[in-house]
Image (tube, rainbow, N blue to C red; front, side, top):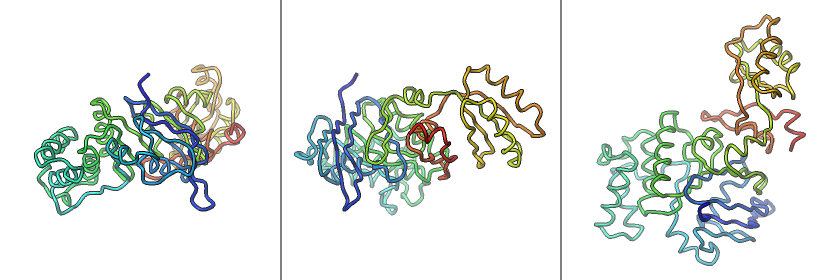
Length: 332
């Protein structure tokens, strides 16, 4: 296992009477993306702001790349880069001018700033648009340029706070590819996100935060095992058929069915592996309902998130999933 890039122990941060971090413990290892998940208000952004030296915890210890954040914040700032939810670039300047300006603010010479800028433009696939004004960029290009601004100082650790918020699917996939490339080239990444597929796609380590504490930590596969059960999922052709499909699947499930009216899907936990498909097909056979497809799948991070936090996950479009099932409430 690689050396830790972040070591947090007993972190507490209060804002008046609100305790945003309530004794948070987390060790994030280098050489990968570490994703931090949690419902709104769980403490994700407060944790990132603490790592970024933007706020100071009231108690506990925090080290970044072996550096004590409380004692040596200026040293920590030299090894991190931060990119948030919105592109922090100057629209009337070109992409190249933006990056060179940021590099100069990092203290690089003109020659080094130019060299770093060229390297970042190549790494993020921005060379072709480098000399266009940023106001002509698409949202995805602006977000990649913002990512470049956080990289031009050559940070060891990149902090990404919900970086794909508001992006269309193509732009999100492009940014994902850029993040993978950065990790392959040696940049460690701490990513906060409410998109479960994003964490599943990118992260080697996932930590789930709720009420200011880490309540689960591990690889995506390890966390999926916490959900404990395989799922049968049925896609209804008509939303009116969802109640009857849920009742039928409830008869063969090992737990209550979950209905997602937004996608016309009903899912139910099952025992017995793939053989449960036959039982589900038989249970649905006598219904006057149109089914577009039926499938068997392993647990997802969505089930883990629901089970542990009681909060629905966000979709890329900003919608939420189904409400927490009674079984999930009992497991909390």
